[in-house]
Image (cartoon, rainbow, N blue to C red; front, side, top):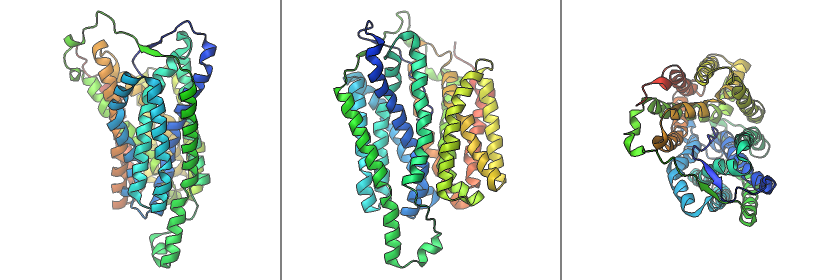
Length: 434
C-alpha cells in the first residue's frame, strides 16, 4: 500500500555476527519489492480511464479496479502472515512474486477476451501477491544490516514507493494510453467492424507492459530462490507482559478513532489519484496522456518529496499538529478543485498528494500510542485491515460522478480529509484505557 507502515514486531538475524556486506545484495532484492508494489498501485489511475474506454464502462464500473486490489489486501492479509509464520519470509516472498507474475500475465487472456471481469480477476491475483510482499518486506529490511541503522534502511527502502508513484503513471502514459478519446455518441456512430477494431486495440495496449512486468517479477523470484537470505526470528515479548490482563482492545477509544480514520484516509488517497485523468479532462479539457504525465511527474514526485519534508518538520512540530495542518490544507485544495475550472482546479488536485504523504504512518503511530505490549500487534493488524477504505471510496466517487459529474465526485475525498482533520484535532486524544 502507499502508506507503507513498518511492522511493529521486532526481529533478529539467526547469525548476528554476519558482516553487513553480506547483506547488500539481499537488501537490494528486498528493496526492489517496495518499487514493485508501488508500480501496480500507480498504474491503477491509468487503467481506470483506459479500461473505461476499452470495455465501455460507467465511472462506477471503472472504479472496481481499485476495489479488486484492496479487497485482496483485506482478505489475504492474515493468511499471508500465517503462511510466513509457518514457512518463513523467503518462502512468502517467492510465493508472493509468483502470484504477482501470474496476475500480470493474466492480462494477456484478459485483453484477448475484452471482458472487464477478467481484468478484475487479474488485478485481484496481482494484489494477492502484493499482500505477501508487503507483509514480509518491512521486517526483512530492518534486519539486513546493523541494528543501529535499521531505521535508515527502512526509510531508504520506503523511498522506492515514491519512485513507483513517479514511474507508474509515466509508463502508463507512454505504453497504455492511446490518446484516442471518443464520446459515447461518436462510438455509437462508428460502423460495427470499426468499433470492434478500436475496442480490441485499446484492450490490447495493456499486453506488452504487463507481460514485461510479469517476466521481470519472475526473474526477481528466481534471484530470491537462488540467493542465500539470512534467517530472521521474532523476538520474544517481554516476560512481564501480560496481555490477558489488559482487557478488550476496543476499550482504547483513540484506536477505534484511528481505525475509522485510516479507512477514510486510504479511501481518499486512492480516490484522488484514481479519477484524476477523468477529472483533468472534465475540468480543464486536458488530454489523457498529458494528465497521466502530470500525475507521475507532479503528484507522484510530490508524494515522495512530501515524506522527506514531513519527516523533517516533525522534528519541530508535533505529529498531530502537522497532521491537522495537512488535512486542513487538503480540505481547502479539494474545495478549490470542486469549485473552479481549468488549470487552477487541476493543480489543486495535483498538490493534494504532497500533503497526503505523512498521513498513513502518522495516523498509524497515533493509533498505536499507549496500547501496551499485549494490544500493539492486534492494533497494528486492525489498522492495516482498515485499508479496505481503498475498495469502498472509489465506487462511491463513481456513483456520484454518474449521478452528476466527476468534479462533484471529489466530495467523497473532501469528506474523508475532514475525518482526518477531526482525528488530528480530537480523535487521537480520546480516552485511553488505563
